[in-house]
Image (cartoon, rainbow, N blue to C red; front, side, top):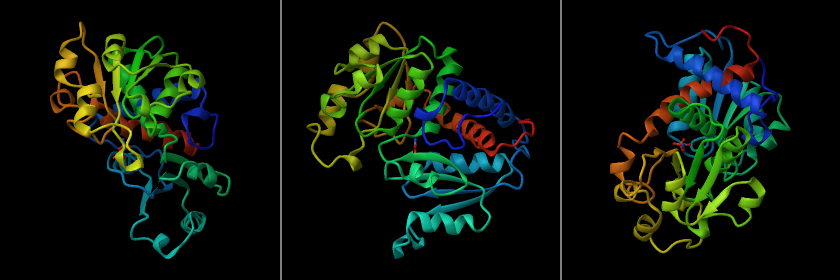
Length: 311
Ligand code: CP
């Protein structure tokens, strides 16, 4: 089985069958990761560069670990400390790295569309590890795997995505994935952080009342307030944001049911999510991080075109 695309630039480009294939392959790799020896030879002799032009903890480490578990050779590139500071272009940087016989590129960039631009100019397969406010496809895939582990298939499940939708590539990739796989999606948060036409453009529900969204959903995926991407005041204060839109213990206790809590990280504790929720039994935040490695192994393996067994 193969993906319909040479690259993973976004969930927007994937067919439901591609998403299913990645999730099924990730489940096989998750079994590998439970063994005493957590390594398979699937990508031996393949070299992958992790190009990070923007900060990351989870995604960068998770890709590197996925590559090592697959026996690939790995190079890590951070823009800070590189010749980017001397004015070298993205394309020159990547072409120089590829000339050293690198086979695949994993890339995070603050510019929306940077991996799409690169895909038009280089022969190597590219995995988008987050581009600006556009997409973060492997995050949506690991979120989907985490939901299915707890609740079974995505079709018919009710997922609330809560918080800063406007600046979130996690939101957009999740919306594409969940709607393609037959889940229902409600976006909740302040009106200033939810794009006006998103309801009609994506076939999702919108509410500005977080309690209403929580009463409706099976899963709440809570997003970080991305202060670094906001160049104007979009809500009064962090304290008031927490009171009106934050996920707090009293708010969850006021519901007649238990909702699964997710967050892509990093968390602004006490703003969008309180610690006694983030660290509670109903939170699957660390399961999401764990699943990231298996999902990224699946993506890299499938894009490599290798036919070796995943076990
Ligand atoms: N979820 C996520 O993308 O986290 P990082 O920014 O730490 O990679």
